[in-house]
Image 1 (cartoon, one colour):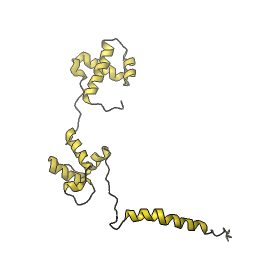
Image 2: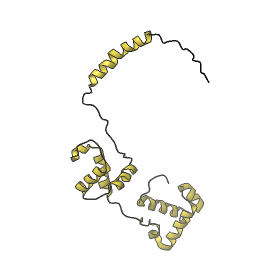
Image 3: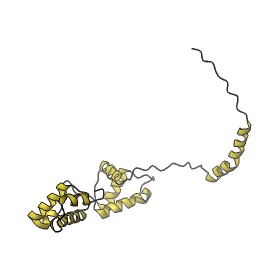
Image 4: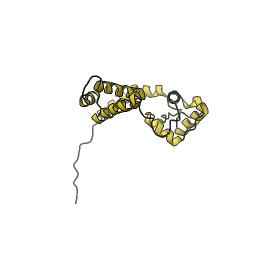
Length: 173
């Protein structure tokens, strides 16, 4: 079950498994093997179908606190990460968890703790990005000229200079 299982897909999987066993007469072992689930699960689903009907196959609600952001809001926040933080009023080009928390609260009205946001962003493969600092004085054209004109000349001169011969040293103990 390496795929992500939504409640709809999980319900469909259970319905197919139960139909194969109860209507088509396949063995629970064959159904479990073909659907890559355990035999115990198929047996449990068939029993739930007999006792409660279709309602017995429905996935149970997940425990725990519900997420603060719905799917559309999550997509919106992840879209912001592709933009520059300066568009949201920040001075530098670095997204940090406290900044993301500020923007979420300002734009969506949802408070989220920066430490939670670090984990939330990491789960979505977004890591803190520090932009490469480039000195103001850096002149790419001058650097390219030097690499293509001056460096080859220096390299040729270095090849002409003979390296001193290797002289073994005596080591005294």
